[in-house]
Image (cartoon, rainbow, N blue to C red; front, side, top):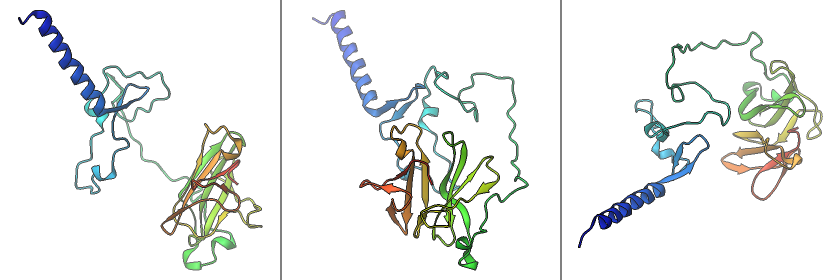
Length: 227
């Protein structure tokens, strides 16, 4: 005989199955309550590469958490995602070039070996403030993709190109041809000799290491101070 108890148990089974299916489709839950899709990060093929197509709506906008805690760190209010209501009006200002621009330019012989391709520019690379040394540190493409240079600054505007022992008397920190290169300051690194990490591409091949940076088998390069 079918009873209310049977109906209750059957309903409970469906609820549990639905919850399990939803959990299988979902991924990690972040500290702010946002649930990532199981496949994260998303594949590049999922995103349009043409400006003629509408951008993909992030999953957390389609299904935001009921309550989003904002006491888990700094919040960037560039849109209304975290704002329930407000009487304020958001105003966007047009940035202006600093009068000292360009703050970095080719002015060393090794940056101007080829007059048609003189260069000193951040090409991916990285610009970080190092609280340990209280310096802004910059890595940049030297000349015609010839090497990676290193510069420091106290204010982010006036930059010095120190002489390094990698290729004296230049400020080259990573000699050899290169394409894109990225330097990362890792504040979570426990080993002080690996605070800075470099990833670079040489004509389509990922490589790492060399003078100034010590590399290991997993193709990462590291340095205690970035120089």
